[in-house]
Length: 284
Image 1 (cartoon, rainbow, N blue to C red):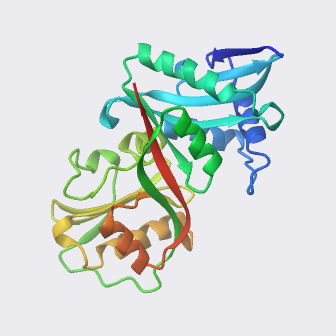
Image 2 (cartoon, rainbow, N blue to C red; image 1 turned 180 degrees about the vertical axis):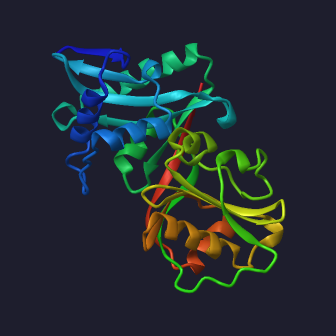
């Protein structure tokens, strides 16, 4: 059978969504993205039709490689949103052809490479990406955190505020130990604004910390100033977010395993690890 590889300029979002649902239909937890959730997925992760490609079999999408544009704040690498093949078209070398087309388009755009996440226990996918030249960069934790039953009293000098993205500092090294992955970046939050929950702790005009959540309770960011940690500020921020989203459990997606302070905080909060992912990068 002949497979035609093309970018996604002329492929409707509905067709792309159907292909993604089909590609992950036989997973342990099958994917059922709605129109709205697929739009959020594209917007949050920076989908670029010009740099995303599909393989067509008789006009039907057999496989896809969804990519964003090169990002200066990620070493000019492009983020791969998702890669998948419809079950009946697997083991036909389509992922390799799609990678070549995507890499070529990104190279013309001046990209230095690509990055993606893959579930660590999915050894077949990990080995495939390694065969394509991707190298392991860091391990990422996905976990569920119960709502604090008794958050500590807030110091008298601190106040809790709902804020906007423009209220956050551009420089975050005083708050973060490691950089967030692309789907939790400032750009991702801005893309889904105003449908995010963002709270901060301040003393007068001095920022002590903030937490940002998507509407489904997934925490995109939590930052507490390094000289103010271990004082209960993180618990206060998470409780404020939980109250705003109305959920008893919050989800942290892609917490860098090397972020010792954040992981220690999550463990003290009773976090349950759901899975581990490997961030892999390809340079060119």
